[in-house]
Amino acid sequence: MPTRGIVLVLIGLLMAMALLIVALLQFTHREPRGHSTTHAQTASTNVPAAAAPSPAAVPTPEAPPVAAPAGAGTNSPEGASVAAVTIDTPQENDSVARMFQVKGHCSQVPSGQHLLLAIQTGRVFSPKWPPIEVNADSWTGRAMEYGVRAGGSFTLCVFAVNDAGLEEISRWDAEGVKTRRWPPFREIPGGTLLTSMKLRVVEQPKQ
Image (cartoon, rainbow, N blue to C red):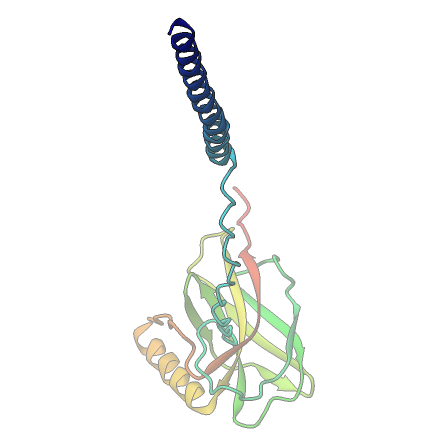
């Protein structure tokens, strides 16, 4: 009996050890997997998310360029042919008397058009009557400016004016002769600006 009891105790101890070994093996087998999963998750959180590709820049269509008018204060029909004009005297930025002669050259003036001098101050124009005299490829005209102080600047302009515009300006000048008032135009009637230059009224010598 004692021997049998000892054998039973040994068998129980062996079975307990076997169960302990199996449990240890199972725990050891699960632990690396749990650790690797945790590491993988941790690693995945440390990997920067791929930057979302920025959409290709779509160029905004530019507004179509606004066609520059032939000149300030013009209302001539689009596409109408005009003469090529240059001013020989005076020269850009010259100082001139309040009344002065202007000379230049031009190509052939189309039928139904006339060359006219005008003075621009600010945004208004004062036509100068009579119209420019054209002789072959040369022209002469007279201009005057009394509204600008001595030493002040203004813009001398040469316009091509159609028949209707010239008639309107003729009536305007005739009315001015009566009233002694020549209100400026916001636009030259029937006019197309051909060329212009900046000038100054000559300063009076100090007494």
